[in-house]
Image (cartoon, rainbow, N blue to C red; front, side, top):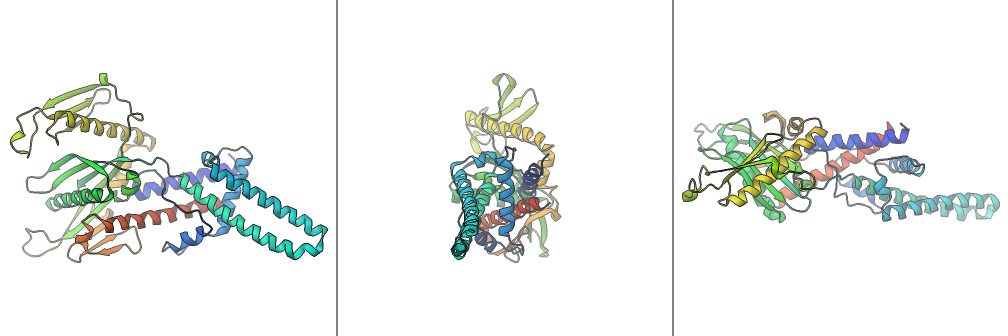
Length: 404
């Protein structure tokens, strides 16, 4: 393996590793909408990190990559390098290097041209840095991987008993409001309610442009600190809820044959009024080759419940397929949701102090908890900050991969 192939392999692997740490899945950083001459200044000014990205490292990476590509070596960025805008930048870069070489020859022949040539050289070098920054931006953006527009968001009660179940319902309500804020469509495909109030588990099927990219930062363990309504002594209880964000595949990615399915209908159970237990509206779909089974009874219509159950089955089968690529499904979900323990938190909701703290950010504390739970601008702004923070870490890992 050549040095450049090792470099791009490390680049690719460290990007995958970073994504798994941040969101539990190996899908990359999109929304890196920077390509101007102020690329580095813009990137460095947006983050609180003490480490800045240097133009030298960017130029070194771009040079090594283009040299390898020019020699016909396979890299992770071959498709991106064939894009029209990228090829235009590469062609301009080549011409500028030729100009610099021609200027050097001209100075050798005519000493009187030295000052003019030096000025021209400085101008060319400045443009080269701009081009390298723009190329680096395009290459980083190309690592966005699969940009899923359909996902399933799962919320599960962890440590904390009844309080954890109540907070599952709080988060479910927050996410539903946030989906309306974003203009996404959704269906609640599973909700295991507790007789004492709250939910043990809930699943939402979400459809919207870039929904995985937008919501993946919710994956992880959410901790809540508050005084329960039944607590007479005023003692604060700490509970946790786990959230998973799972890409929803389409029919092309997961093939399900009718002959491999067993579909059972039954009477719905649970809260629902006079229609409960009067019709066989609940549906169970079993995939016979794998033994995988899903149920849905959230709608009064058997046809709608069947559609939702099939969507959930496809998601589960895709998750299983993806998990084989990433070693195992349990490992992948564990990376997102942990074991539901208090110390695994990504975010803390402290009701007594009226604050929300996201532990992935160095200054991740927000006030007005009630407003945050409305799922509007505050949550959207936090997602934007988390995306930028992850992009910065990704860029630093990219440049570090060149130095190794």
